[in-house]
Length: 211
Image (cartoon, rainbow, N blue to C red; front, side):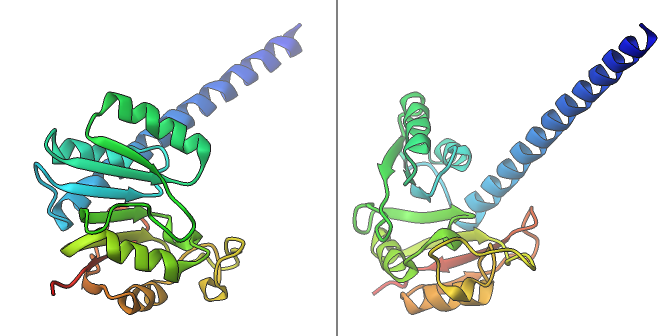
């Protein structure tokens, strides 16, 4: 009997620890999104009426923050490839009328030409299997003088790159030097690489030149 009670107590303590970890991890992640969203708002000059795109929007955490900044007169395009994530984003868009969901393609954003004051993506670029095509599409989609922000990470040592991506990715991440080379080749200019980004990721802000 004592053994059974001991096992039950131990199981209860483990369950509490797991719940506490999930809550703490979720809160930390939510806080990181909030901090990154506010930095993006500053770096990309989001304001009432801005048109913004979140490429590979995932659960829409940053899309929602952007939507709050651009207001009712602004617009946020949230793009995704994955059907389940698209469905989740559609549900988010029904509650936030300034969010428009678009299904992306491997080499196309499917955004209108010159539609966005700024475009951003988080931990997405290193998944691109045909970066030259998507880079050209990004360049077409942002307005002249507009911004592109890419948040990603250096490939961790020993990690495996995403299947199908170019071999120069080395591991599961995106070397910042190669990122800059590829996007400047597409026509973008580097604006800034903030050294105090609020996570263990890096951010590079680009600009599309004006004619």
